[in-house]
Image 1 (cartoon, rainbow, N blue to C red):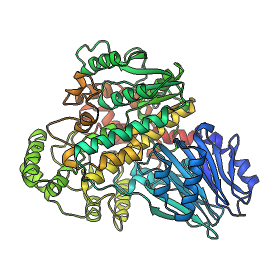
Image 2 (cartoon, rainbow, N blue to C red):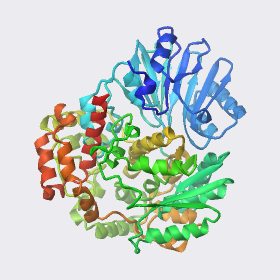
Image 3 (cartoon, rainbow, N blue to C red):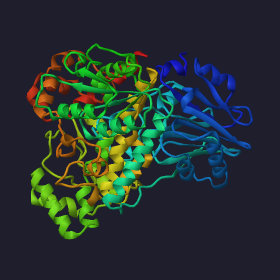
Image 4 (cartoon, helix red, strand yellow):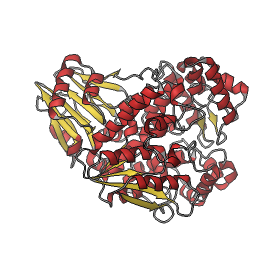
Length: 619
């Protein structure tokens, strides 16, 4: 049998074992392979096992209690010892995390009568759990837990992944049978002498959205500055994306300010597009960022990987993830970019991933606005949004006046799951989020399974926040951290760190604390970023009022060029073998580009899931 180290494909992982005699150390060691036991309980039994870079792990002790911090943080050994001693007294995981401070990290604590573990509220660091040999075992990768008993898949969990965006709490539904997630913002506790049971308790809740833009923007800037400083300390060569957008510009400017060593920026550019405003901004930022190395990656010559290259024969071992992920649909593009960074000698690179979530209005923003703001101002803003998005008055009023609880909305959504829809809906959300959509190739049995999962989830679910816009913000952050975690794993496997400060809990909290009427504006783009960093931005960025997206036509052209080879790749399908997909419908859409105009958002999901299952099947 292959070891867990081999099955994790070279990625870092940690396993947590309770302090019970039923788990033999020899059995644990034999299953780890080249990975090893990192820390032991006071009894001498294994506590933490796996493979973690030494710079990302610290353990401290207070009497008979121990704590391990894994990830990006900056506290001295003495600071952590004090934090642990306080936790032993108050058992408050939120206070403990705040005492540790900025960064993104896992917290593991072994007390005399229990084992405690918590990830982040954003989901950038997560824990999973399952029963094994009568005990609850935890890990930061679900596939490692699945490997303890033989990698069985859950078809209901796979069916949920056919939704482009699964609503809370289905976001946490696992594809591995018997494996469950400790939800972000929650702590898992395994007590003795009942180690087969785990208690899940929330430790985080969204802050009150009451701050004005002036105070809030300053707090958000301070949180980002601290998040960048945590990662730049004692680094000889730092890098950062420089795309020409606000988020990468913020991180590049801050990283350069706090870096005493070498600094390199990375920009993907298309020399054939002279009118691209992002390229103008990149040149202006490069003039500001003096005494740096600026690397240009030619989009046409240096990034040859086609869309969906994983399915089209361009396999890459680094693209196996612990669960299906949209990055797999991008083929080896992410790996090529990461290897380009590694070849420069950079050991840590900043990414602006997650920044858009902080500054774009979520689906429920208008619903909150009419309840939290001056009615006259709210009415004006709602009319402006209606005009810009071409919504009908009836649909707009229905959206802002909807009073259904999250439970009621989710239960009703199960009966209204649609198959196929236009690329851009001309309606605002009809409830807490848009209608649940599925592509036409999902089988009737799989649709029924999804409906059943949604109905079951709706029985006792609570929203992530009382207000819909805040709920959407948290949901968006946690959804996007799935791809962020996968991308970080690729960089880690190449000996680097990918830093994503916009997912740090302190940064998220600072954004959420600002009143939504202040944080978003229909008349100004990225109002929070401009308020916080206008003094640092070049004119072309400070005055920008829109975001460049790949046009529908360009996306369609790029996608359609892959159809002949995708059709060949889908001559057979693991999804079809499992009864989740009707291959005839897949073939029909790949043969008829006209049908694709209604389903472009679903194809990356299909390709990523199929590719991942083929990797599992091939071992």
